[in-house]
Amino acid sequence: MSIELKQVSHTYSEGSAFQSVALKNISLKIEDGEFVCLVGHTGCGKSTLVQHLNGLLKPTSGQVLVDGEDLNGEHVDRRKLRQRVGLVFQYPEYQLFEETVAKDIGFGPKNLGLDAAQIDARVRRAMERVHMDYNKYAQRSPFELSGGQMRRVAIAGVLAMEPEVLILDEPTAGLDPRGRDRILTMLEELHREGGTIVMVSHSMDDVARLATRVIVLAHGELVMTGTPREIFTRPERMEEIGLGVPDAARLCAELRRRGLDLPEDLYTQAELKEHILRAWKEARRAE
Amino acid sequence: MLNNITLGQYYPVKSPIHSLDPRTKILLTVALIVAVFLVHSLVGYALLLLFLYAVCRVANIPFKMLLRGLKPLRFILLLTFLLNLFFATEGKPLVQWSFITITDSGIRHAVHYSLRLLFLVMGTSLLTLTTSPIMLSDGLELLMSPLKKLHFPAHELAMMMSIALRFIPTLMDETDKIMKAQMARGADFETGNLIARAKAMVPLLVPLFVSAFRRAGDLAMAMEARCYHGGEGRTRLRVLRMGRNDLVAALCVAGLIALLVLEGLLLPGGLF
Image 1 (cartoon, rainbow over the protein chains, first blue to last red):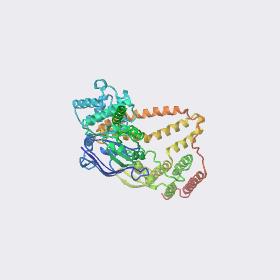
Image 2 (cartoon, rainbow over the protein chains, first blue to last red; image 1 turned 135 degrees about the vertical axis):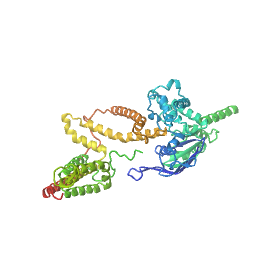
Image 3 (cartoon, rainbow over the protein chains, first blue to last red; image 1 turned 90 degrees about the vertical axis):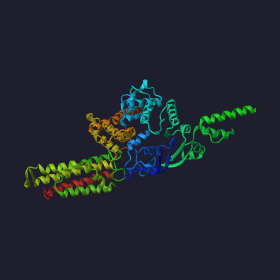
Image 4 (cartoon, rainbow over the protein chains, first blue to last red; image 1 turned 60 degrees about the horizontal axis):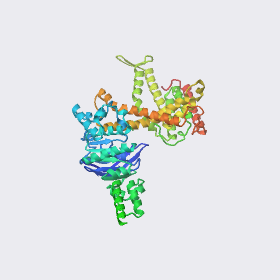
């Protein structure tokens, strides 16, 4: 399924003393199988934007089209839509409420009206996807898990809805490196299996590792969009917005400045490592 | 979704009324409440209305805001009016129809009591519209501080009040967020019968309570880390001082009360 935003603007508390513009005239399209990363400063409108993608917020003006149909039209069943577009909020572990992990993950499927066997099957599948052992954790209380585990349970709760598009708002915020790596690996796998993913992130390294397309927001406006290679090989523009580029891209630029022969469009650690090794071997051979 | 509920209806603009000492405003509001009970005629209510309107102008607040505060009270107002209208026993009966009797003093009471209620709410709204919750609790603390001699925990009460007020918007945001998160998982808060709706609140309330307790724990820790130990010997960042404007405001209210007393003497029970 595709999601398209047409000149979407959003103003909070319009017409009151507390009015604030969060989005200005945003147009973009998210296609099947993409891994789109939304980057920008805190308060630039990222979180507002993602809430438009599944109809939790209505645009003040403009349209959100899902498969060409206006999401805020009169005959659209928004609950059905929310099943197709799964949204994982920031710090999703704060939404856990059930007595057991299995019941919590099953909350979504239960709301869809599935029977017990189907719910159980979905819970098992979702837990497997987030690398949580069903036999070990299903009957535990979600409140006695570690922060990283709680986060994965919460993500499983959305995955159990089996959405076609998965949206995550800073899924790795506040996690230790291991918890973070687990989430990123999981997302990588989901994308490889053909899922469409939209991720909001502050970490350019995470973006470099996963994105097929990057969208840059600043002050509620869309300022840049392109492949990570296009975005990260223009570090000046990114610095100007105050966002920076992945560590690997910075290191690459610095090594080039010091005379190492490297291509200028490297931005992932893996690529950079390969090129540095190659350059090093060539240099040794030349000696 | 929840931003149409404004708890603490503070209207953030700059005005001479806003910058009055909160103690002045609290005391004058009390005086105004007393004044409402002095009124005995429609002329008096007209005076009060004029006064409130004038304060609104000086405070840079649209008069509409004051009237909007009455909206949630419309049923109570109506009830007050009807009860007084139908259940008055004394006075000259004007209308008599089966069990309903409307007397002249019944009408009088109905009009008076509903107008009183109306003005009480408008008067106190003026206070909350022009005084931020923090200033309000500061003012209350200082006003209550003479009671400390009687071991009345004035500082602690004010601190609790400001913390509670401080966390209302935070918890509202949190509620909004959790609600949306559960809606994203197909939760339905809007349809179904009473029991279904009460049940639907569980996924909202459990995380909300968990987070409120977590926040309370964090806050207690942070306060202790900064050596908070209660009101003893504590100084303030903003020291409240009464100034010329406070005197002017007090004189205005005193003038109003004098006029109302005069009105009571000149028109005892007259003109309604």
